[in-house]
Image (cartoon, rainbow over all chains, first blue to last red; front, side, top):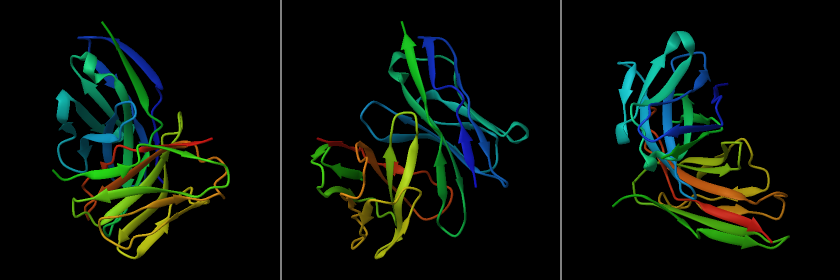
Length: 115
Length: 113
């Protein structure tokens, strides 16, 4: 069974600073990897996804993530954080075939942005 | 615009009551999912459905029931057997295939009073 670890429950960064949110996964084959963002009291929005090809993927809102198979990681990055990026971020891994994909979510990293 | 609509946004349940959370999508997605979100625990899968009139238990199905009579609709009933129902409930849908992420609704917050 697959699993996801987000080691940082809470991160605080200054506006304009760079950001990296960590995600490690466990899965025997090539996984499908996702990052979602959730604003308070809202649903989750897909930021980006990886399933094959270029290991550096670009997403919405200026985010990118890099898949590193050797480290079983899929860290999310942004070069310059904006106050509107304050939210909770979830890494997820999908596995399966035949149309159904079981997706396992991490527990989330809450991002606080200070002026 | 296409999307997923969850209603109500807030719901209060008395002890011993069953309540039903609505989830409707107009994305023509085949698969629909219900997740429960608790602080510090991420999202946990309650039930999912890949086609009409078929659904499967997820990791925490006890105390919940669902139906899938129409492609667009996947209501979740929280029964009195669910001993700790206070949580944020999220409905999601996905097109067939492994490469697509979920589209989520905006959630229903259920509180037991």
